[in-house]
Image (tube, rainbow, N blue to C red; front, side, top):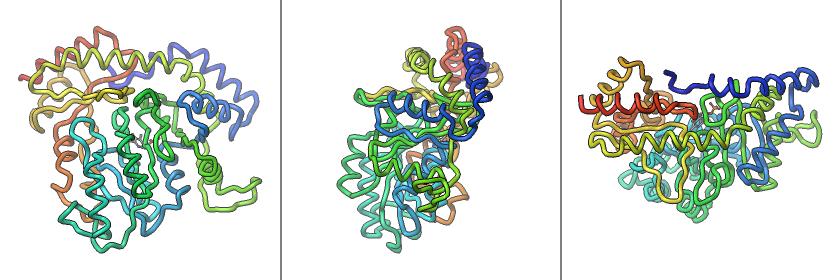
Length: 390
Ligand SMILES: *Cc1c(COP(=O)(O)O)cnc(C)c1O
């Protein structure tokens, strides 16, 4: 059994993928070919946003969004420590300072109440109010932006995050790397904040066969700046450079593959929901596990189906028993970012973000993809129910 099975999907559309690749080989426009524009148009329409700007990865999408806002040294960007490294890495890469805010226990997403508390602490430099990184204690950084993450495919609480961003004049980025296809109150993920960023890494809900990403925005001038940054800061023509940018284009071949895969996407979102629904139905009543919570008005795209065990030893024992039965499980994420040595210069300590730290010790994810058969789901569920009480 695979944790994420990409082979079955490929079998369904192998012919179509081949035709799309063949078309690129025939026209030969490997950089910014017609498939790139076609994909931008199609995905922009699907999520319902004016501008869709493809790029080389989800990491580049976040980098481009921060660069478009001019984020750099002296700026603080508030984000969650319970995410993939890329979310905060891009902040440090630009010389800005990541400032972490703990998550809500139920959704694993950034906690708006704590975000407010952190902003007050940042303004006063008062670390007794909220844990702050070293530079912020000396009031050497100014809050400029928030990166909210839609972890495991569940959108963050954008009605409250928007209000906080607006009240504080902050740029809001939706890290939708895991949530393309999700919804909040009838609105699709990738439409929240000033810019939303997604990833087409193969294991994401919509993945290509390499690296890829996309920025979404309804703001014309931001979109123009992001298009320029993606192409070495280009101006009105290729060899006029009006700002510092990056080589951040999506390959035409990856766009062609994504167009083929996107034809299955809406069906796959429904299949993912069916798998998650069955998992929850059978696991909900197990007293030693916490199943994922999807608040009213939210629709997760289930990039991961993650549960909490009672504690670290319980989690490790469950995973070992499952492995013995040939069922793969994975920990997302075993170490919150404030405790990663890459960020040691920020000076955060263990205990600073207790919810993230507790979840990191207890969380594990089950196999999740649209083509997981009911037979496999039943095997997983019964193995887990047995392992949880062992
Ligand atoms: C995968 C991921 C990224 C980075 O995307 P890449 O395409 O791998 O660069 C960023 N943020 C989150 C939350 C992710 O899961």
